[in-house]
Image 1 (cartoon, rainbow, N blue to C red):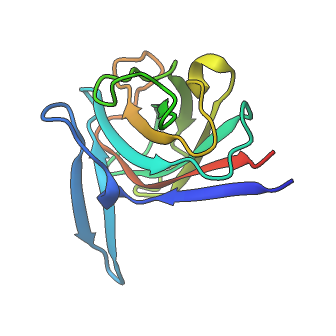
Image 2 (cartoon, one colour):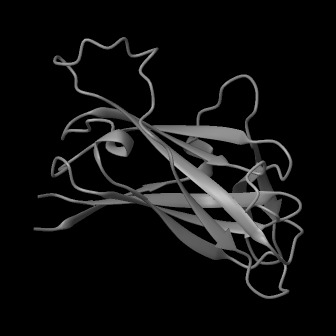
Length: 171
């Protein structure tokens, strides 16, 4: 029994024609930092396409987000993750219209008064709704959003996603 990890970067994100975070590279003092800038007033969505490899059917998936606040130094951000999965040669669902499973969320609070401090938080996809009937070898899409309309999201300005990781058991 082992854990499988898949890592995703901002520049691999896919976007629809509206409501998407801006992809930026900022020249830091010592190195460039690339991120998706999720707005603090409007919900924005980004998508990643991947193959589910060595997945132990029905086991929880953990989505770990690495983010920082562009300008804020306090309050919380609400993140959402949702999975769509299609089993090749078995599912009859149209690949362009497959619905996402039930979204799961996490509220993460900005720590202290240090701007642009790196934070990490995790969202667990568990149960048949959020896991979207995922199976080993599935073609998958993950949707990650910030939910500024949620009352728990009180952080002003952009939340910058610099990457995320998917983890799950292979049994």
